[in-house]
Length: 250
Image (cartoon, rainbow, N blue to C red; front, side):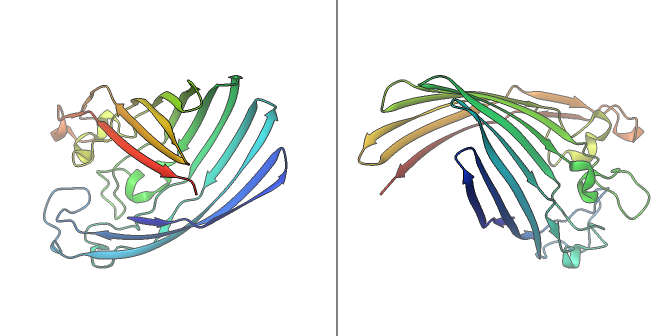
């Protein structure tokens, strides 16, 4: 799935900036499984391409000399139905849901910034993702619930060249114990991420950066409350990653 997000912001005063943007999407899918069960779709090995559109609006406000508050609302991205997979695999378009993010940052010292964000992802409003996975109607989904995520981070400038960063993110799993089996191909059950990183200004507008993250292992067992045949099915998931970056201002 590829997103193109042209945007425009306008600083109305020293204390407020507003922005608006479009979201244009192009996606390609190929699957050999029918939604809601694990039998062949009959159209496997065929690509389906579909397009979507959405928007987002937001603003940043200065609270005082050392603080700011920001709010961003991202609409659903409404997609076309998935061509030859429509009806046999997915009965609804594969939309992405509304996201609302609010956060603030403040500088307790001249060299340190502390930030906190709250993010709501409305998975339940997207039928293909949020509907009951064992529905006997024509609109089954994966049973995801809404996510509420809190993020805390700190940035500290050791000197004019070196900046260090650390953060933690925690949110509820969108997958519940009753829908573990229906989500075995995408075990999005991790709830906590730890991150560390830093950047070093090597001069002449050039900056080197590095960061990494790790998550505690998450485990879920299907409780069988929606599908007795799935009782005891088990998901275990852990993630970690590392990245290097280079930027040059000229």
